[in-house]
Image (cartoon, rainbow over all chains, first blue to last red; front, side, top):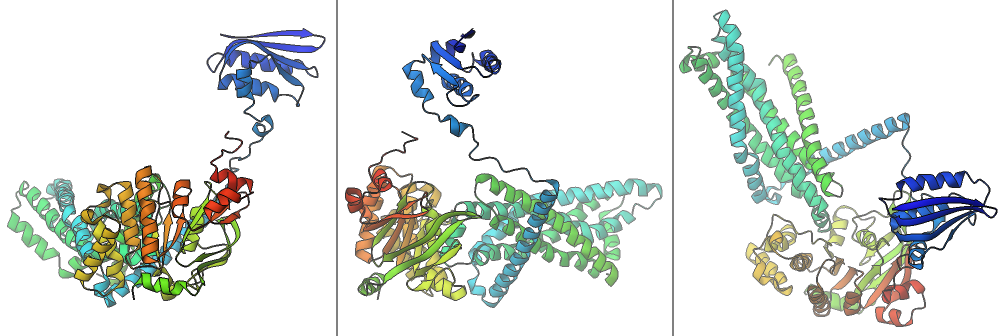
Amino acid sequence: MAALAVTDSDAGRVLALSGRLDAGTIGAIWRDARQALAGAAGRPIVVDAAGVDYCDGAGIALIVDLLRQRKKGEVEVANLKPAFVALLNQFDIAVLDHDLDPEPKRLRAVEEIGAITSGVWHDIREQVEFIGEMVAAMAYAVRHPSSVRWRDVWLICEHVGADALPIVALISFLLGVILAFQSAIPMKKFGAEIFVADLIGLAMLRELGPLMTAILLAGRSGAAFAAEIGTMKVNQEVDALTTMGLDPVRFLVTPRIIAALLMTPLLTLFADLVSLLGGALTLQSFSIPFITFVHEVEGIVDFSDFMAGFVKTFVFAVLIAGIGCLRGLQTSAGASSVGDAATRAVVSGIILLVIVDGVFAVVYFFLDI
Amino acid sequence: MNQGAETAAKAEDGAPIIRVDGLTAGYDDFILLDKLNFDVRRGEVFVILGGSGCGKSTLLKHMIGLYEPKAGHVFIDGDDIVTAEGDARKAILRKIGVMYQSGALFGSMTLLENVRLPLEEYTDLDFEAIDLIGRMKLELVALEQFTGHLPAAISGGMQKRAAIARAMALDPMILFLDEPSAGLDPITSASLDALIRRLAENLGVTFVIVTHELASIFAIADRVIMLDKRKKGIIAEGDPRVLRDTSTDPWVRQFFLREPDAVAA
């Protein structure tokens, strides 16, 4: 145990430390010692360490703390064993008194708003620059198809398209089933359950099929693009491309955009069909045969409805792949930044998808499509 | 004419292959390197050394055009990489090869595919020719038995050798190596040193190497510059063996004699 004895004499106040000075024992005597030091204003202080048997880093910190409470020379340490003196001499009290690397000051609210605005502006500028680079790279790919790394394209097509079939099938099927059930139950009261086929046909082909597929791809492939390119950035592979004189946008982004452009429309078609199948199977339990469902959908959904949904998929594809690649290329150093890139790819991808889908809805309304 | 012969021929004209002129580098308001001037001669193994945090890797990244300096220029074979853009920049980049500290091999490609990549992108050679060149480069670094391996399936030392092979794919005039010995055991490190020396002597390639491994420095360097973070610049330049034996600068002596800082002592 550690102990502190305070005695006063004409020469000043003596703080006698004894016992074992370590982090587990000095809590109480540290407070007492500080009080004893504060209570002897103007008088010399001697810290007598003759009775100290053991002293680790925490014990030395106590002695340093007592030394720095007063001006240099006003507190003296006496009788400290040579082994502990060596420990104490490692530290320069003048240095410890000053924070040589202070944490940055917290910004005021106005400065914070300014910093956030500047960050958003910077992000928008980067996105515009990236769109320019992407368009240039795609134009180059169209003019020089042999420059495209087609092997990479087919590999990415497999990841984006074929590997996504099960999840797209499951979600679309369930979406068809849920839509059919939720609308058939109230419609049945009016004997109008046959019109559920119209609802599913129009909603899935025009709106939900393309949007749900795009959101699935943003979560699946957009995040994968960001993580893959982000890891390449962290591993200096993107630097290696740059110093080889190869444009990372042409090399990494173009194959992913092409793959997404090829696969998103196909996956959307697949999603449309599977969701209609889910709806048709559900309506069988409402005594609507499969053939009746098909005739009803054929009657209400025309080619323009199909195209209204289909055209969107190309724009969605560019958005998903573009934002995933951009976030990947924006990755800074460290493993956590790869996770951040994937998160940002999904979040900004989905936000942009919904915004663009809204723009399509307005445009279609005014074009009467 | 192959690159080695070409480089050897040019070596006679005595002009530096790299000239760093008044280079000032840093991050935000912080200046790390202030008005650096030095030359790298053709065909030499030139080592940039110094303690941790003195700006060695930062200097290298400025020399290869990855970072934009606050001021100054870097001339590669007479052309300024700082101001060059588009095709002019590509032409400069064709003259250099870079091996990054981590190797930076493309993880989804085999070693041979990694080495073939620059050849596929920059030449119109047949696949067979590109494949042969790729295999020859890997043979130069004694990796001919690992051409089909992915980078993750080989050791750190092998990855670095493969990265050197990829950097040499287009027979560049200059090879930049960032800490080639870092994280390697002494035997692998010595083998890599021997490889660098052999390539320098046989192919006439100019090497610019960042390292602080003393054994490597004495084994490979023709000339060194030593950077110091306190002076934000060069504190010594010349043959490392001469600097070790004759320098009166306390920091230079401390570095070569592996003496600790007073604080850490």
